Length: 247
Length: 300
Image (cartoon, rainbow over all chains, first blue to last red; front, side):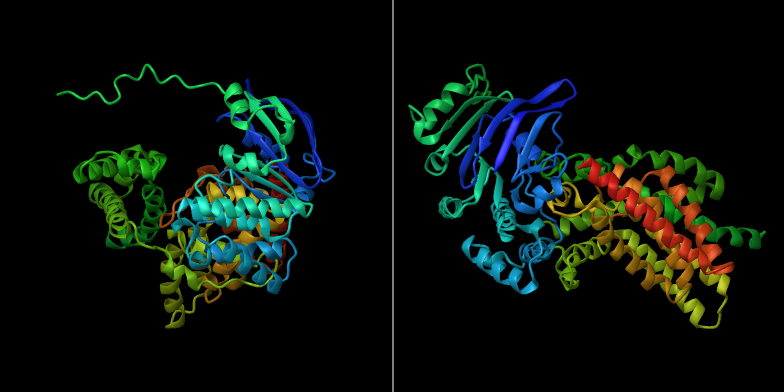
């Protein structure tokens, strides 16, 4: 379903993604992990046709992401990094806007919107403008938008961050269920406890390069151990002035 | 002497309105609102920052000598005072409405049918939340009364219709200003071509133009509106810049001159020569929609 060959992205002299290669078959959950700035969101943007790769090639559902990004966006449900909501539309209006653009009838859009609002705990926020929503509600709205048109592949950039634990578990179960029905889920996350239970494939990035790629059940140690091994720890020992106040 | 001063006043007022637009811009926009809110500044310091930020607007330094030259010291001081009052009103408005829902009235804009209906609804709301629209209303309504109550001068109505379109024209060269940054990201994810996205934006703009200019000079107004969009599309997709609600739209000065020159020429030609200039404006609009739509698609 998702295929990358030597995919890369350069911004001037800076290499954000450096020749990554992987294949994700249809149906199943793949987690793209890595520290901040590793290149996860850049890969998401290239796979969803938002950024044109400067190196290599990639396809989603057989559509080249560079030449046929419109077709990719038709079959994909996308939760972008900055959520992509319109300030002057309410939560409910976002869903009613999106359905017809993907070819759903008004009645079908309304029915699906009701179910998603219910499932994601957004019913009370239906008439709230996006600009007035909390970050968690905005994220759930963006997730509902990604699911509304029954996509063949889901690209979710940090779907569990800023979400309350109960809803996070609901979303995890929802994603596991849609993956069992054949939808491919490609997500990034920093919440390893959820990823550990959900993902069937793990890709870990560092400095734009893949440092670990494996089926989740073939990892010799726990996901957390692997992750901490490849991520660079921060140095906080020198910040001695923190907590020191003049008498 | 009195008549000379009086005859120049109208153009001075129009010029002042055009200048006050940029002067009502907010240089503090460069600082994220949440960050500004948590800085330990007193109310007096915040007011000083707000008023002092006027000096950071290039138009302020361009306008000041011109106003002094054109209208004398008193006119220059008066317009600067108006700009300061606008800044002060913004501070007070933000203070009074902080933490409260601000856009309840915009709920009343209904969703339109069709594939692009939801986007058009959003764009109507955006148009209703910039000052350009209200400036256009302020210009159009007295002109309508002037026409209806005993002054059916076709030329005067045509000129006022064009002035109304000029008031709206900056919005037409920054159509995505109020979508920053999150809405732009959504547009890039939707399975829509650039021309469809632009069309959804143009529908709300043209509707406003039609409503405001129909009682004055509908053909000239509509032709000018189409021309404003045709000239504004490239800037809208190539020179996107963030806009703020309840402010005047900001645009590129060179584009604005080109846009105003074209829309006045096409509007006058439509009213005075032939309605075929409306067809020419439509053709120009469609070509611009196609061309700028392709630019959008390529940039994606």
